[in-house]
Image 1: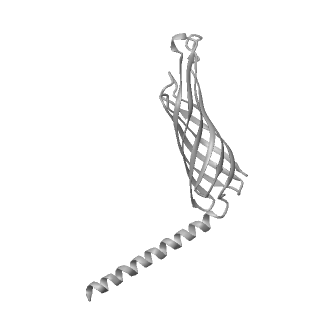
Image 2: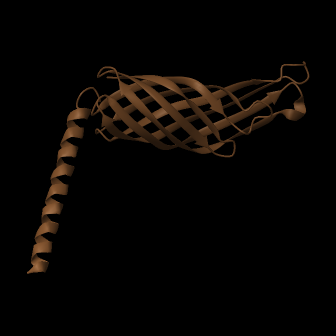
Length: 190
């Protein structure tokens, strides 16, 4: 008889846990319904900083990002984009001046996770073509490279309206001359 009583208590705990999980899921659905879009075209731009250990002198500089995407469901989308970093190095003498930069064009799958009213996290995973330049007036310091790259990124978006979101992001082009950009952006959702 004791075993059947324990089984009954166990079933009650499962039912309570299930009821709480269903309630939380319903609440999160209600929260994300506010301004976070469930599908449609989006266009965005971001600016901030960037970093690459492949550059000769200064490793950081100005970073930028452009993207055009489509959100198929509240959780999945795709985008094409371009990202890059520009660095001016060592302008102390005419023979030591150099300019460095890296850029990539890409196609990526986007995974979205609405987590609070007007807030959404996102991950990007994709592939692209990246190019790298480390150029100076000293011809022995010139270095170029390009190739296929894996694109990985993450961020968070705050939806001010159904059409406009502010975003904080970090994104990397991973290949021989890996570089990372980070910053703030704005997107318009059609």
